[in-house]
Length: 337
Ligand code: FAQ
Image 1: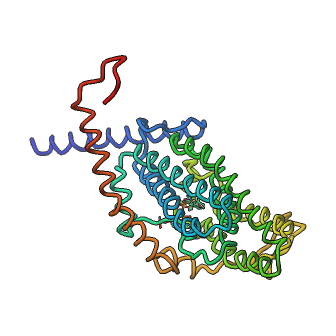
Image 2 (image 1 turned 180 degrees about the vertical axis):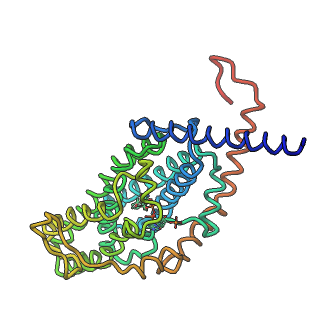
């Protein structure tokens, strides 16, 4: 008799809990529908939190790993001015990584956890950064195509439903638009240069075009997360729609450069008012995502090495912070030791 009462009572408690979660989910979706931002201390479905942790940390890793292909050219930039600009751009990417790691932390994971996931190969980062930068023109192509693709995707993210992510994206987008312009300008100079410079420009565009299209992710029909992420307004546009906007924008800009895009099927479609374009090599994409691209191994080794070499900096920062905690505050007007 007593056991039956206990079972009935625990079933009743479970039912109440399920009802409470359903009510919370309704309130949560209501906020999303009314365009009210979700903030770190608000209730959120666990799957929403996990989706954000995955996407924002993947984005942060992309910024940090993305410093490597360009960083490789800082010492070889063709002039002092180009060197200063490239240095500033690469530093910007480090800043973007920091804002995004901080935004991930607001979801209850530590930076050590997220970074460890990158270093052990568990976490993904954008496929694009697993391709090599062979000539100076590649730096132009990265700015024009890679930053161009990044902006299209990220302007939508300034309106994403999670407050800290949306706010981080506002500043990032401003800096990315400068990055894209500097890339285009590098290519514009090369496109008006000697025969060899023109060839270098075209060769870089040929190599970076298809990988840039892959940055937008799989077709919507193959995308695991798009449907739910659109309902939660984490994503505002699907992968295919953003990719199409990118093709339409770049096809026009390529004309200004007097360069071609390596796709025989690229053609203006008057009825659709869009450019038609050829099919992406998805086998190549998934191969790179799974860790088998031209530079995946090299990129992870570089990040792991940087982490190990930076250990003394982390230790010094922790020791300094401990020292500050124990030391009495400096009296007003006195000189700090
Ligand atoms: N590479 O279901 P979906 C930059 C994965 S920042 C690798 O469609 P979702 C700045 C995806 O994670 C560039 N993996 O996924 C810069 C998922 O994995 P799962 C980075 C990819 O999230 C410039 C699976 O495939 N930007 O360039 C890729 O809804 C120059 C299924 O895909 C961002 O991260 C890929 N390309 O849509 C820095 C923006 N695509 O769950 C330095 C924020 C998909 O199976 C120099 N992220 N996957 O483990 C997003 O907008 C989204 O995450 C998408 C993918 C659109 C990338």
